Image (spheres, rainbow, N blue to C red):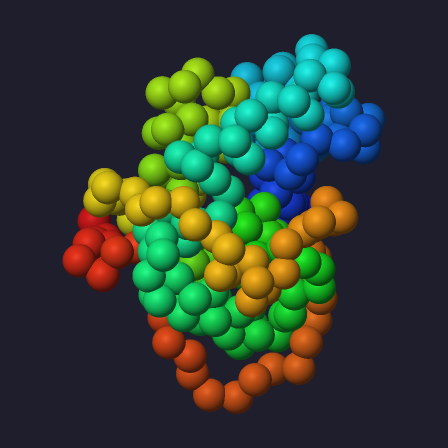
Length: 227
């Protein structure tokens, strides 16, 4: 398996781990665990606490913990732009820019969730070559690191996913400003809520010619720096 394929599978595993726990996750977690152990041992070592948690917890308890962690706590939201754009118009434009980024890479969303949903973004990274995935991850790492710090402070086993992501880009995550008030109503009206619980997938789509505006994954006053 090539290095590109290894990282593609790795991002797919991360995406699966951050989605709402379904019976399939428990059934496949041992296989996912073994896959990482054999192909990406460093990733496996960092994710070991989460795999141990999933493997040793009843499904109903995992689901309740997931809801309390990600759905009931705005600081842990898995929607990237919720942490930086809040109620401003920049949030809607950021959604449009991210959709354009997906389309520019020949992909389109299929489903009802918002385009900045972290598992969807990780699935998108899995379909890029290693250098492009690293570039895109670097754009988003400031928000991902913020979520990871909040999870770690609250003792969540999911924190290790975000800590691993920080090691996959040379971009040093910067501190975000005070997070905005949670208000996703306008975005949900525009892009549609995931009422049926089914997350969107990405499928090949005709390449759209021309450039797009860069995706604003971080506050304009805190542009990312490479070290």
